[in-house]
Image 1 (cartoon, rainbow over the protein chains, first blue to last red):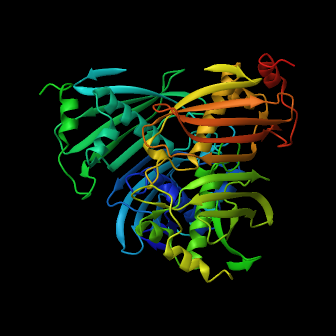
Image 2: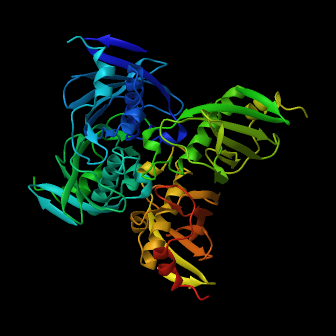
Length: 144
Length: 144
Length: 144
Length: 144
């Protein structure tokens, strides 16, 4: 599901909670949401026409510099979650993505959060401007 | 290592980075830090004389309601990390803990973050005031 | 994809490799395959008409007593894997499931393995015969 | 703890079970034992005087080609586990390691298993004979 909302590029990915994702509290272990965000981010990029695997093959990496998450209600084993990812600020050296995790069956908000990233060169591990492959793929979704 | 600093109760735990903690970027996968925080939090409680396992056996759980993390420099396989955890605000229904991750060999700051928790009853999953076992254990470290 | 092959009930599940699944060797971390097996096992049961979540709600659990895996070629980030799961021996107290992991793009065999399980009661943690909900769901796929 | 037993080189590593290691069955999630084996293997090598990080820096990797595990009794949160790792067959191109997981408090056997590995070159990903750094480190523990 791809859309433009308030000039943010948005994509939603479905993830079913695995048994291994749970902990003895019977909920999804809290750190797992960062993995769900990662999957949603990968699919957000894929929806624009590039794959993150391609980005790395071109010599770039996109490590996190910050992440935050608010837990609203727990998700449990076998839930289907909709992970909505939004991106804005195309031309910034930083990539900022926001996420909402929705329990599909009830449309309840499970958690929400963000990640901030910096493009670096694979070899030097130095920060660089977003690569052309990335800017070209996303620019068609943004009006100047 | 236990200490009181600015009326915060502080404890430091060492963790060696496992191979399974790394990802193909050659760094510790970013979500792992929430697991390191969790270990540091467990050891912080243990240092006060209670174990979190004991808290759960008494019918309480301490799920997260928020977490945040800033990534400064990457940690890599086999690094020994010092995870410093600090707690304050003893009598609040919310438990707020702050963390610093230090690479032991160089004393560089790897990352820092926080987690905020709420005590709930195991059975009802409803929020409750901190249990006596917890307040008693920590109160000896705080001046009113 | 559901089928009967040599009196084995077979089901195939697709999993895309996540970034978090990789390690610094650039491959899927070897322990992840047990998680992939778990997902395939869950979907195998679902294909018969029961969910494992339902099995647990009925008071049963299905812990592992043995697992084995052979690694043929590595899988990498963003690969789509087909996890084929096969079950036989319906009336045994032990549940034995075999798996094959295939890289979808090339049809290469990535790994293969098995897991053996025992039904236990949730409350007593004692081994019991397979519950009716399970036997009924599977028996329609087996000729006596 | 280092020892020679029946011409096997043996080393024991302690691991405390983390909350994140558990699943909703209240036990350690079964795939975690492969991670515990990995830590024990790393410490086994370190006890001989080499670090696996060093092996990789020398251009070698040691991926798994097979693993097996038998689950005896469950381990739970906060348990201290002793992971005993044994190595033999020094001059084989394959490295075969056996593991026992013991619950420290009761000395009960939690699980046992093995992993088999092949040395490969980092760059070519081709199988090679064990590197000199490895053979030299281990040979002092073996009588011909």
